[in-house]
Length: 140
Image 1 (cartoon, one colour):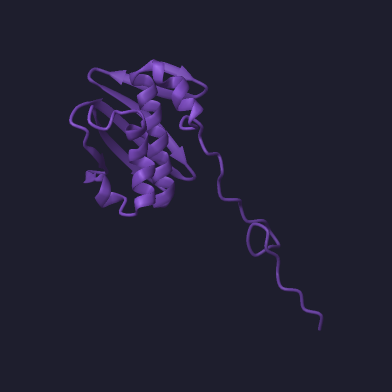
Image 2 (cartoon, rainbow, N blue to C red):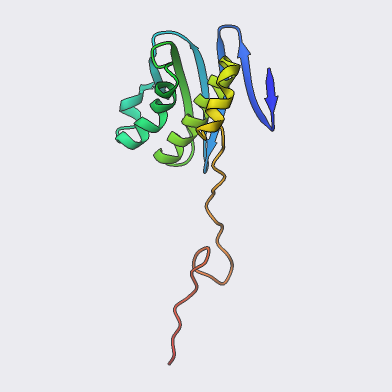
């Protein structure tokens, strides 16, 4: 098991497990040698992420490193919206690929795939209508 800066990827028998997070979405990725099928919550990738932007965000990682036909990916994702879930899946797949082949670690890092996007929704403050928006000023 490789633990690095709070990142946990585990090799269990024939598959590798990794976790990806983005906003409030959490994706648990299982990567194993296989036909190249990607399933998200029991559905095909293009059925779960119908927009091309989210589809490419997830599938692009495997395509970029030539693994799209070599590994089968099973993803369980929950929380957040579709774009946040796609970002979480992308990070989980990248971490699993790093655990699968350690020589891919530097190219993955160079392309920015191993960096977690830390942007979260800003909390609402008291006395305001949202995180920053105040009430409308009335002169009279």
